[in-house]
View (tube, rainbow, N blue to C red):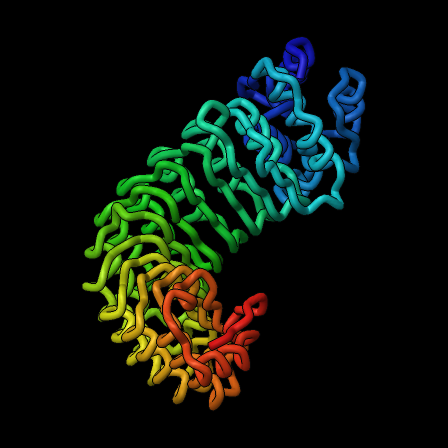
Length: 432
């Protein structure tokens, strides 16, 4: 609003407080405050006409009588694209065409900036627009380089928008170096946001402090269904905090914490123990954390005690035969798990034997991933023979093992050839 118009409004004694020059132009909270105060005044038709003459953009029908009306009016006056343009101008950057196109088209529900870096300033401008946007439901910031990441300051701005926005349901921010400061800001937003269902925060240099803050948000948030904190360095403290949150959270259905060796076996065990008592999570990815054989028993307790998990990824955790035997024994009593991944765990013949015994009694698992292990012909034959009596298994992905490293015999070759499709070995030819 121009300064002269402000002075004229003061002269008419319609309002008695100092207005900022940017009022009702770029900042929704200040504009809402203005209309709220106008609503309290007794304004005659003549004064409304005078306001129209001095350029104030209202007519009698548009003067808000309630705050809800003010919000609706403001959304018409200042849409996301207008605010994005204005904020870009203030920050000295050109408005991006892809972001503008999404903000201008109300039919666009997904704004993806995957492999399309967004700078800190661009994130701040977009954040201002998201405070009033009512269309976008899914937003993706991912795969930025270190030189173009939005960083903590950009994440803080986006977090402010998420605290206000009422339409975004899915929020992905990865490879953006938001750090603990950015994670803390997002955590505060998630405590009050009531629409977001999906939050993926992988590879963002988030440490223990950021994880602790996000854990506190998970304790009170009632809408998040999918949550990932993978490929960070949350350490034991962060893993323990997340574990405590999972014990009380009642909405998360898919949880991912893969490729974070900083949690060590202590943090991994804490997560496992929390999953044992959680009653809402259906999908879990704890792969590539390398906790070793020692935590296999804790995973076994999860499998025995949990009755909701349907899919679990435990690939590349260095369980070896000893750990896999423990997990296979636990699977013998589980009736809910439909897919399990034990790829890359250095499984050999004894682990394969335990899995074969499991397949003879389990009637719920449909997909079993065993790729990239050390299973030779003898172990593969044991699994193939067990499949003859199992009608549930659809696929056992046994590729990239050591099946050809030893003799398989005539009968062994026959059963492998017979079951090769279900073993995920379609392109192979087995001969004695």
